[in-house]
Image (cartoon, rainbow, N blue to C red; front, top):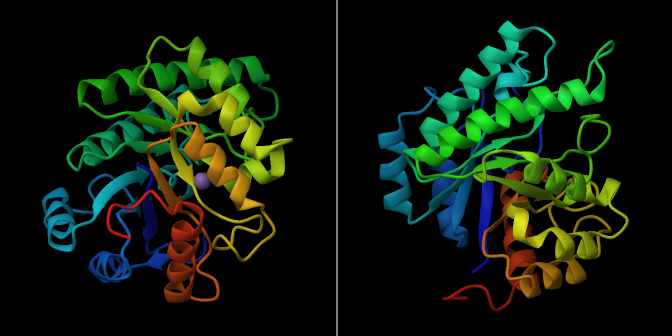
Length: 277
Ligand SMILES: [Mn+2]
């Protein structure tokens, strides 16, 4: 069953970004539940920014699952990536993500590695950077497995990383790992920039896709851009994808309308996916 999800950003230092609800966990969850979302995805400053018991209690109260937790704050706030040439920084990046995996696992939620994958920086060749990333993913994937959760790796568009920009290359990377606990994130905004055909790529890579970021061509909520979502939604359903489609989209024109637009789009494109439509 494909389920609907909406993002909540809880990092005070970050004022703009592709998240629908902002700053107040309970208000965001109450609004998401009121509209009828199945789950929320959380973007927090660190693993100890929220008490997992409190999140679990809110999850229970509002009937919302925790779909995933983002790790991007490790890069944005602390400059940590898995591919930094400095081994001390790579070690800290791994530790930051390890803690986030632990936090998510308390809620049954996988952690997402997006911007913390970093880049092949000047002077470092891409194979070396990919080797460092594989090292990190192997260690972190095994750790996630021990805690009973998956780890989600997200290919990003060329303006955000020079490592993996296509889902197909993400599949090759995953197949080269020692761990089988890592899945791919299909972010429809990144894919709109990079893939020749989003539906075709979804069909080819379907068994590796563990999470979907649901956004239009311009990162606005689905329906506010020019991505042809019908074929994409069909490809996900025909491929038997049974995870979340999570609105990692700009809060345009405002969080409430962005959330409504997303849920309307979800119900339109995935009409048979909800038990109680
Ligand atoms: Mn994303």
